[in-house]
Image (cartoon, rainbow, N blue to C red; front, side, top):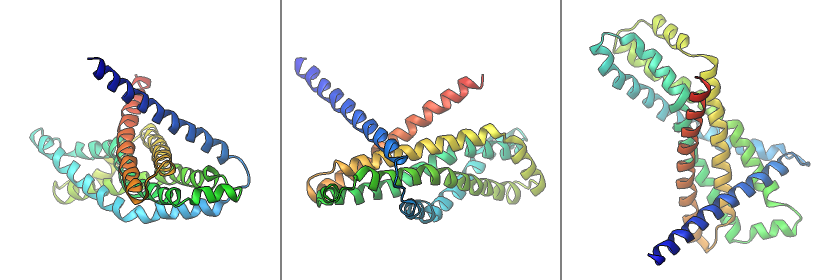
Amino acid sequence: MRYLFEVFGRKVVVVFDYIGGVFKLLFQTLFYLFRPPFKSERVFVQMRKIGVDSLLIVSIVAVFTGIILALQTAYQMEKLSSEIYIANIVALSLVRELGPVLTALIVAGRSGAGITAEIGTMTVTEQIDALYTLANNPVKYLVAPRFLSLILVLPVLTLYSDLVGIFGGYFIGVYRLSISSNMYLTLTFDALAFKDLFTGLLKAMFFGMIIAIVGCFEGLKAQGGAEGVGKATTTSVVVSFVAIIAADCFFTFLFYVLGQ
């Protein structure tokens, strides 16, 4: 029994040490984010890598999500002769939940892993130490541009994902369920309110923060050569996924309580 408590205690210490390290990096990033000099070109480079290069995979996932959601909803709606409400369900589900979460998971698996691998390689090859010798702070030089680009790009990607997903639902509603085009679009936009769009984009911004900080943190503490970089990349993706789902649960509960 004593051994079990010791093991559990060590695990708890490791978890809190990890959380402390992540928040320490977050505060350092926020500090250097507003400290000159500002190198906007680094931010634009990261925005292209994270945003533009992710458009294809986001489009594919979003349109199939909209199609699947419309088809699954149609099973019950057809029994109730309420097919027209499919437009409302698809739009609200995508804008409030599925759009932000799925987009964040895609970016975490693609760009978050890439950030960890890139910075982790620099760490194990002592390029991070070289930055210190050149009077360049790694947080200012590497973390801050990626952090800023993710919190700017992910809401835009989420909005794009929402539109593509709604188009997927529109395709099924109009060409499979024989709902008129004007009626589907009218029901879609009547169902959406500003708070629905705002909550989804706010979630996306925080998801971007999670992806950036976790990815950079794992990269900066990577060690052990190529194997260490691989482990750091895997850990980065897993932690980002869990943190995104947990954050989504928290924000959904928060908005539910505030909306009462």
